[in-house]
Amino acid sequence: MKETRIFTLKEFGHAFATREKARMVFSHLEKMLQGQPTQLIVDWTGVNAASPSFIDELIGLLWSNETKGLTPEDITFTSAKPYTTELINKMLHQRNCRLQYAISIEAAQAGETRTLGDVPTQQPSPVR
Image 1 (cartoon, rainbow, N blue to C red):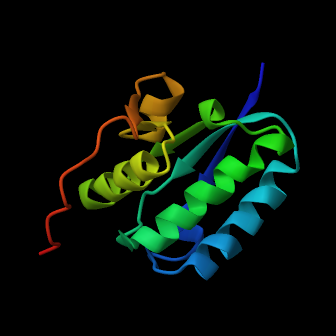
Image 2 (cartoon, rainbow, N blue to C red; image 1 turned 120 degrees about the vertical axis):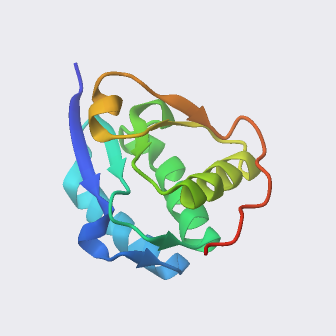
């Protein structure tokens, strides 16, 4: 059985806007995983905003990491704000990728997830 590891994005900030920032965050994620097979929960709690470029780069890096023992089936995103969840869904759909999403870490651990990336979303509504 694979170990579950939780990667908390707010340790790196509360807003993420660039591909460069996604690469920096991903390098920390790689160090945490150490190439070991794992179930990964990416916790978005406390992240107030993430740009499409940050999300797209992070997703691309996660999918390119398959050769290191991490597959899309092993990844669950949790606790993102609705606007961010819509952007994640859109980026996944554009890349023809899927991953699981849960409303909380506890829900993810209990297997209470839904799939993101299957259906295109409407344009996210502006943040007010």
